[in-house]
Amino acid sequence: MTAGEPSRPVRLGVVGYGVGGRYFHAPFVEAVPGLELAGVVTRNEARRAEVAADLPGVPTYDSLGDLLDAGVDAVTITTPPETRRELVLEAIGRGVHVVADKPFAPSVAVAQEMTDAAAAAGVLLSVFHNRRWDGEIRTLARVLESGSLGEVWRVHSRFDLDEPGLLEVGPTGGLLRDIGAHLVDQMLWLLGPARRVSAQLDVVDLPAGRTDAGFVVALEHESGVRSFVDASKLNRIAGRELRAYGSGGSYLARPADVQAVALFAGRRPAADPDRWGLDVAENWGTLSTADGREQVAPD
Image (cartoon, rainbow, N blue to C red; front, top):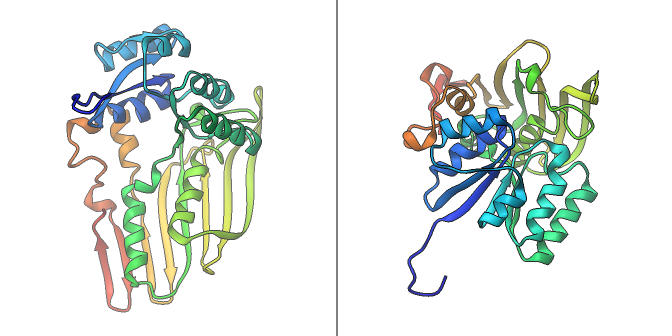
């Protein structure tokens, strides 16, 4: 595009239309000004029908190569983890920018391989990893920054999911690489780098291989604060909880996973951007100090 030409939208394709592509990628591509959803890659006939119903006029393609041939500026790869490397490298090889869903790679070596390939091709490579912007995390950050808790001692984050059918199975899957990637990242963002980590995995043997279906991770941060994150997916329990303890009091919140609930109910961020992601008042956190208890409105 040369100077003086009108700007055009960035054409972005979604690769895969399972739970990730349908609920956590396409709706947000739709909602971003300046992005055009250029197409969806899926060979599954049922999912093609879902694309037609959800995204009227958006074309579907049998393969990433077909989508690239049609012309896109970037793609977001939402297919299962075991397919991620090959698809990322294919797009990079065609000079297209890439957003890869998490888990980004099955190993550090593969992550470095993809990063080096993107640098050599002069394209951007990023990971779809956006839960630092969850309202409950932003609210907890505000509470910690306010000093209301005094010296912060420890923070707990629990995220139990009653979703056995959605567990990513096999050696490249598992819950720690799935929701665990978000929960650990949130604690590092809130509390700074960790100097010591320990973990326990709940492992199940499945036809696709041994898979962690639950975990507890303990982090000792360089600041001296400790954090504990845990989650499960096969234990028939669901709930989100955040707790923080300090010399001046505590903070407790049991929020809903607001965005996921809305998306699975068929709502879309583009329809009501001003209220998107806001939790109901009964789920607001409570700050308890010597001055009493108060509800904290979310960010």
